[in-house]
Image 1 (cartoon, rainbow, N blue to C red):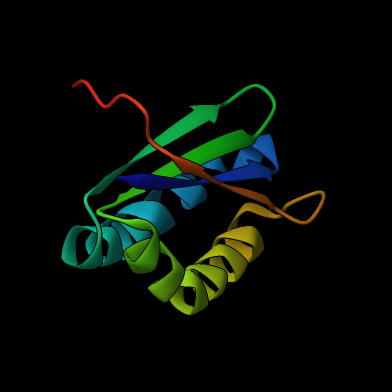
Image 2 (cartoon, rainbow, N blue to C red):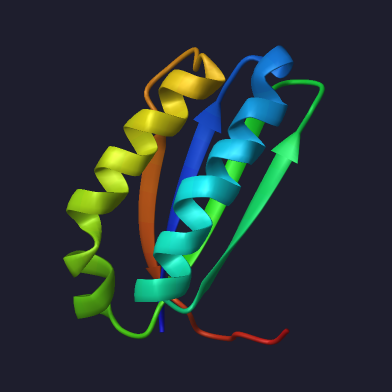
Length: 96
């Protein structure tokens, strides 16, 4: 399993808009093409962290174009203060 981690530094006033965007756009895409995702937010700072899970590296890489578009849309909705950060990892342990 692999994971893509996106870090967003947004406007605290736009956190709810970011959550709604995630529910409407990111969550359905990852449910259809990936293995799940999680959204973490800090309402005080406007920071958000999205972790999306993929069955293998090839599946994660195949979703890059869509992820870039979804990330740009989220950045617009959350009035980000800087370009979102993206990192990719192999998941060593997955325990829910």
